[in-house]
Image (cartoon, rainbow, N blue to C red; front, side, top):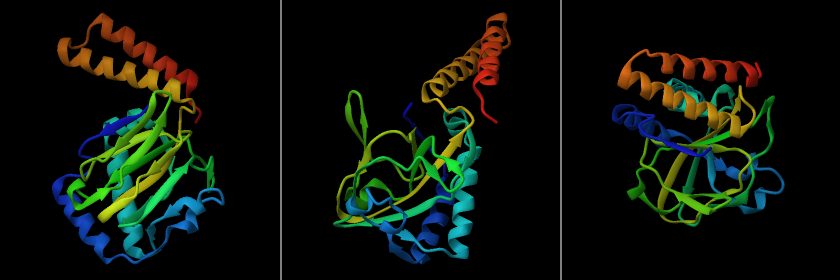
Length: 219
């Protein structure tokens, strides 16, 4: 399942995060790419620092607190976020994310956009699907969540600078199709409750959702 999420960060939080981004120091992004991806990666990533640790914690907390992210990803744990800067001429060619990152299995990939789309040209995140390639360039503070199994790339930036936070989640529900079914059930359950309150139909959907999660979750 691929899903976009609006307003992970509000305007105040986003402004504070962007102020911090300007003070970070950056290094060659190929250091975190696998041998097969390093040759197609041209960007920079924030160097280790106390400021980076703080911004990672803030962004991770915002994602985990967002109900749509929680329902779509079913995160058991997140990797430390990568803060990426892609300037004019930078890009990241087609690649698939590593299956294991540190001690975590990477089930779900996500990108949190930190630059307004008007700040740069190009730089779309392009994700391959069975129906073809889809390009995404979201508003600052919005995120996209997608299976880590997909081929994807970042189109060349031709003007300005593109800042994003990228990360991965090990999910409580390993299978992407099962996560999608649970997401749909939870969405239907929530909308039914909002429209009609607690009804016998709501109870049946809630029962199915809970018992499927009980069956599929890997704790």
